[in-house]
Length: 534
Image (cartoon, rainbow, N blue to C red):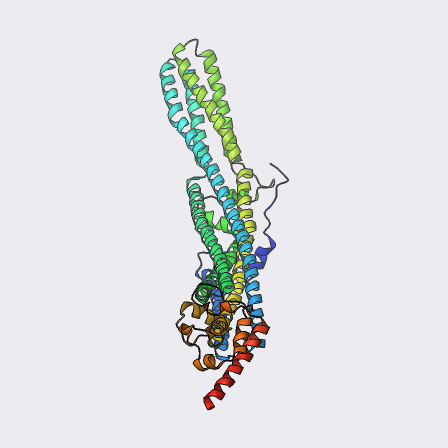
């Protein structure tokens, strides 16, 4: 037996989680020992989930208060107040995106670590189940050979050696040795029930872990997609997309807090088991296997004696004695009874196979194999498994923070978009420099209230479709006409060429051109007023 074996030592984070308050739903402290069947212990884990639910309620309450203040306390939309708000929304979106990316990365790592730990545990359980199944198969096979095969050979030899009393006594002695072997094998523990329990635990754990891993994978992808679509809605200033992402953000916030409660309860319960797993295993197997056998496999040190050493030694001595007797009969009885050779060789072959089974049984019953499986399972659950669950708890916290920031930024961004559209609607449609007026004028040339700069100036001639003011046209001096035409390169042949309705883009205006246009318009109005008074 190896003396440099490594004992199981629980990691520090399991002690930290084990020291969490264990309080039932009646707010009474209970024992921290891992007792999943106890009602109070179950309530203590549910209480941890209720703490996460309380955190969710507080988070939603703070969001509701913030949104109420945002809706009620409206400020005047001034130019100097728009820039800091826009900057605040931008930085909030950047912070939410970065926190979401970090949370998703942590979540992927935690999900992978938890899956690796559970896989290592199930692999160890299947391996231990294979070992116990091998022990049960060897024991049942050896007992079947001793009861049926050896008994048939001895019965035929008893008929052959009926005339020789000494040979008959040898056969009777061999039968006693075979019965002794069967008795020792019956003294071994029945592994069938323990084997079935390990297999069922491994199967259930593998099934639960698969759905848990898949659920978290979908949650991580959902968080990432919602974050990307929210950033896209902010970039494109799409109010319907922002509203949709706000609804999904609230849903994801609820899922984040729910996963935090489930992960926290799982981590604390698993840590309670990892602090002293040997006590729980011994309490669960006391009705199946004796305590000294369980203790031998859980600790497996040189100070402990093998509880199977005595029956295996008696098994070995019985087989050796029977082989010596068969060798004597082959040497002395076969010359006198040649027909007995076949049965004697059959018994010898049966004893050889039983001896091989004995060596295999001795190796399987050694504590080092099952103890290694036990240690691997504990390392998988308490190291990788609990560590991965802690990372998933961190993911849930970061995701809740990210979506809280996002839910605070989206209403403010939605409000800014609405204000910009309102300001855009408040622009004077009569302003010839309004891009919207030019765009609407190109779509509806017959609109009488939409006069752009180029269309109004080009109407000094015969363009009656644009309906310019008649007094201004009839009484405008020639110098004003030449000023109008000078704006277009000084060439009067562009006078009667309309720009609206022909699909051409509107010209660009310099500050000098706009000032010239405004001065000419004011002069025309003065002339029109003088003519009207006259």
